[in-house]
Amino acid sequence: MATTTNYGWDTPDDTDLVKDGAAAIRTLGSSIDTTTKNLNPQTTTGALAYRSATANVNTALPLGTANQVLRVNSGGTAPEWATTADQTPLTTKGDLFGFDTADARIPIGTNGHILTADSTQSLGLKWAAPAGAGLTLVKSQVIGSAVSSVTVTAAFSATYDAYAIFLTGGTGSVDDENITLQLGSTTTGYYAAYIGAVISTAASTIAANNNTSNFTRAGIVATDGSQFSFEIINPNLAKRTYIKNGTYGGDTQVRYWAGYVDNTTQYTAFTVAPASGTLTGGTIFVYGYALS
Amino acid sequence: MTINIQIDDLIREATASEIEAIEFRQNEAEAEKAEAEAKATHKAALLERLGITEDEAKLLIS
Image (cartoon, rainbow over all chains, first blue to last red; front, side):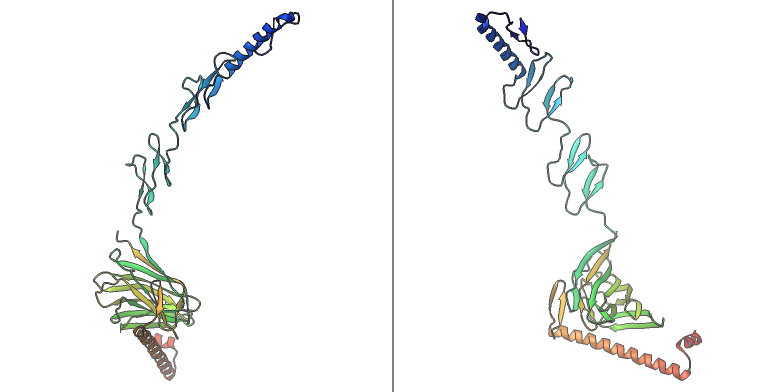
């Protein structure tokens, strides 16, 4: 009897009798049915089929569960659905991918914290507050337009004993006018010495505050750039407040200065003001020197 | 003319006492300038009478 090439199904020979045709068709149909079923053994939604050890006979692999992946079984003989151990552990916004003996999530830390290596942690890392920097920006104050004075409050506190203060980027309505500095509401007892030089002649210039109502030369107003720069010590301690490393320069001269306020007032604020004219724009930066 | 002062981010018109303080500051600055100018004039006159330059005077007293 003749057979088909691939599956060996029985087909009638050319010499078979027509009267046997019905039986031959039935035999062929039965073979096709059996083979088709062997190749498509799945009976449930999502099931897959893979070849068994027997040719033309597949094995059904039912659909796995959520998040499982298809992999080869441990014997290396067949596919299987499995929950893999190396799935991402991340679940939450800001999670980082960590590892101990297995993958693990490192939850996001507190705002402002930084990631720090720490071998005592199970994952070797932790979020922690940054170590105290040497110099910390306490406050920045943007100067408005055409103001005659700027008071900066909450500039000094018990957190720091020494501060650096700058004015950058500002302009003014007049050229080469002094900017005065007043601490809190104190209007007496300012002592300072100013030593400088005239740029064009190198001639020395000196000036002093001997119990004045403010520091009279804390900075310079200029139409092309107002500025001041100084360090202030003890403003919030019940001790004399000292100023050192003050510098200022206009178009004509540059000066260095230092001084003190003769009282033990604990200040939190200061006011800068041009001796005449106004300030416009720029930013006053107050930095605190860390105590440890 | 309006005089504005700034306290932190708040900019407002200066009060009478604040304007007084500003004027006091300006007067002090002007007086200081006048004093400095008078000193400079006096020094120049003295050097003129002595017939020497500032550098020569510094050399003499050094």
